[in-house]
Length: 386
Length: 205
Image (cartoon, rainbow over all chains, first blue to last red; front, side, top):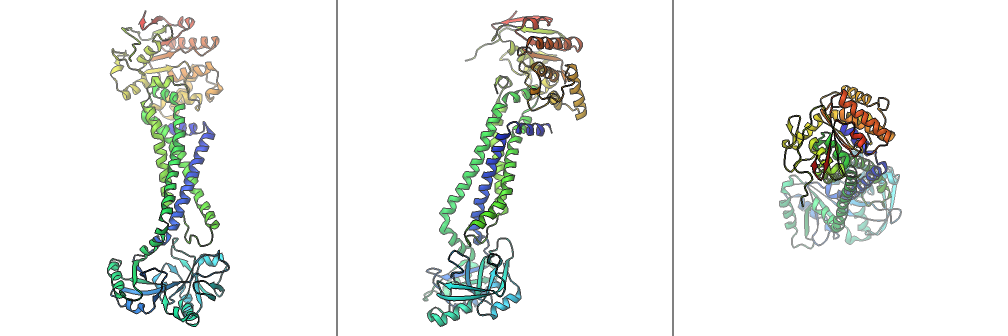
């Protein structure tokens, strides 16, 4: 109790220094939290991947389409439960700055293969019934104030011409990590329009999504699919959904590594700020520590005094930093261009890492002053001029 | 290079005595005091206080021994600036098994003894030098040690405050039977002691 009281009183001895140290830790923890949130957002697609989903793309590049006729052949492979497909549509909605994923999807099975997109059955029935029906994520609906029945006019780029999708439902994510910023419209609208406008591009899908019964069978099933279309005009490359998503993230792996290094440097900054304060503090109080030793106080008491002060500074600074991470990351998300990060959440792991790093810095920063104080003889300490 | 400070020093202080150690700066007075108080160790020889050879005690045992047997009075008071007078005086009692109430009563009594019963909640910065030294003396006697060691207790005080402090030490010696060893340069302070020893170039006379 006395150690706590003296620790607290010592903290208030140089109020400005304590405040600035805490502020330094707060800013460092906040930056660490924001950077880690950006990294998590970058990897959100990978994190949301399911082990039971395979993605089949053209072996040359996923920008080349595959024939729709592959579907029944893939379905016949033992272990395959459902086959669905999608095409990347892109297009321009309102203006070129409004970016979010727009895909034409198989209206019958797509939502069965992605159960994390929670949609009312009535909306699914409408999607199948309405040729230009579209189901949009809750984020899109909120951002553009869209409701069921509204028309979303689009200018095509990959698929040229004017398009009008009708909102027939709004999906919500099953959990916080689910992307709620996609527009998924009836694939038949794309295909039938292509028959009219560019018949050569009809009957083509961007990629297949294969739902398998046993994730342990993924290697065998992937090989079976690729073997099936070997030596054909459109050979396939089958990957797990995670590998498919990682192939996008890996394109920016150098940037991610650099960002990660910056976040590690920030941990170092926390340590330096705190160590500097603690070393100065202990040096000023060597004489007082010597008096305490003279009176019979042991090394444990001194460790408690110095360590307690260091930990209090680190933990208070970190707590404020963590508390600020939530509103500021929400502000950052608002400020980012639309669609940059469909999922931008501060993860529990980020908080644990930030708090753990601050705690570790609190302990490490106290090591040098504690060691010096314990090594110091009482006689030398009493001679010290504060 | 090792520089000998004290050589062939041997002396005894009977219990209840008041000894003044005098001598020029650098003669080794404070070193003797530190050895007797167990905050420094001799390179050879023995220091026996109240039947205990303090040179044989481990650091932790020495800390416990100091807490219950020695009261310290320093030239520059060495009070904790962030603690009030009573909190400073309570410090040595935190290492005992006394409860909070007992500690508070005992510390208040010690401050009464030194004449600061009305200043118990004052911080050191709110006290004069003489009053700070009185708080330091209260801290030294609060755990009822047998031996008080005082290193230049009047060295940082004006004449009047120095006299008051010496009167207080004399009273502690006479009324409370405390054995006192005091290092001083001041002949008037030394007059209060029963025994005066001079130290010069590491030799005691």
